[in-house]
Length: 201
Length: 239
Ligand SMILES: [Fe+3]
Image (cartoon, rainbow over the protein chains, first blue to last red):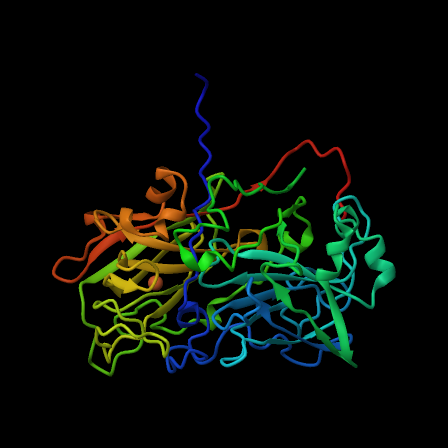
């Protein structure tokens, strides 16, 4: 026997269930009058620096069916690569978005800016990316992934995380595709041949 | 090396848990790609009290007509949000949602025959104090049946969504009630591998915080991932 460690253990995760929108986006869930507006539906609170972009996508299950009961959150740096809350950040940009997806199609949509590069632990730079977090019925613990940009090939090629992925054939699952000027598409596949890379970080 | 302590994936539920049928087609099959937290995971949105309304932490009244209140056993739920090192997590945004006393959610996709309570909405939110403490008022939710096996029922529970200091700490979980015989029967509770993990989600009846002639109290502490702090930095940080 040895001394007991007194650290606490992280609370176990449980699924967000089918009614996550009651708690997190109640106005979307037609539960009006409790909060004036749903948190996370506006990322730009004024004139923002940098290039404004729209990101849309759909979360698919292993049969290819869109999830219509998910909640998707994103977190990203501003156009200069500064996270909101840090010195010098864009005061009109929250960095955080939350989407319930479209009621009929499940498609999520974020009106945001293209993030700048941020540093890695060893001083190298990471390619521009947006952190995604997905919860829904049937997902026991929130899924963490990242959206990179297909049109940042040079930065992606030396990104410290993308370049360490063993199965490079899967890297395209993390790349948002430019649809038109300022519109990027990022579909997420929970299972199947196109399964998105998910992270443990 | 600073950064957040890695998640214990044997303690946390697996993605694929066949007894909970919805997980079958919604569970990634490939291994998660691991990397130490970077600034992208070590930062997160900050919420201020300006987002909160006066009744946000009072589910008994925040949807009720003037002078009315929700039906059901009145309870106070309180506790602290801590990290794995026992440090309080101040200013954490906690959002809660639940069924009414009859086990019915106010949602267009909900089909359980139990009635809606016109004075109960089912959502609330609050920020933790400097010592990580929180408290909200609600009614005890009822158990409800759900389509999984032929006769599965959820134990009474309250859903919790928690924002700590960093995206690495992001967590959604559920709180159960001490003494509920439905807990061990539930396939969603059953995704937890350890008996201790189930116990960590069961709130204790706390008579010391009960308000006599008004509401009973339950205590529910929440633990988020810890941030390592060490005096022995031998490598420069990226930022
Ligand atoms: Fe529930």
